[in-house]
Length: 283
Image (tube, rainbow, N blue to C red):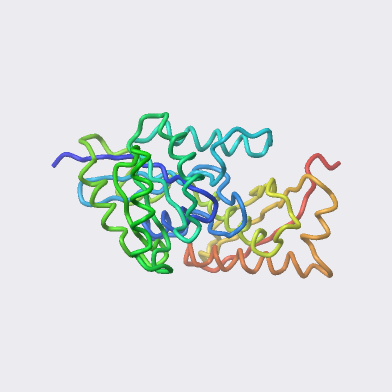
């Protein structure tokens, strides 16, 4: 039996549900889920193997497609376009409750420049009457660049099989890139770092900039099979250090506990997480 392959990029605005979808597809929390802006800092790869077919998903950063002078946004944009260029299909995902035709039209026309087939997904369909999507679909058909439309709830896994079946039908004979038991190209250190970044975004809200960097200093499974991790939270401005630490260390304690629990659930073992806050280039 020959193997088949297809590569797909998930594209859309922040909070459209791309990370939730990719986590639902692979059955593990490999992509950070948070309601803050641009939580996906680089393209997370998810792998879905169905019978003889390997579907590879890229979860792109949720940023605008138009040019920006913001330096931090430029890296996100480079990651996004690199993903678009390397795949066979583009899946444009939106939160159906935030549908805006002009914004969607602008994005679709922009990404259509790479001449890849585009699938359009309305997510969070469980929160709206399905009949209300018909005028949206008719409006979007006028753009004449979308191959298929799908209605799903990534959170509840409703409607996902429909577009998976289409991808299976569009796959082509080729060697698999990843092994049968692999679900992501990201290693354990990357995933544990993402858990801590997610915890920071959860508690810190708008007070902390999004250029925080989590640096792994130690990742070790002990003889008793517990997992010991040491991480450094690197920030660019000293004034944020006190905010992250909090009064009597309350904030850093909450961050550590939330991240530790997430890591524990992913690796299914007892976790000992140690965090410290450092300032970039601080002597």
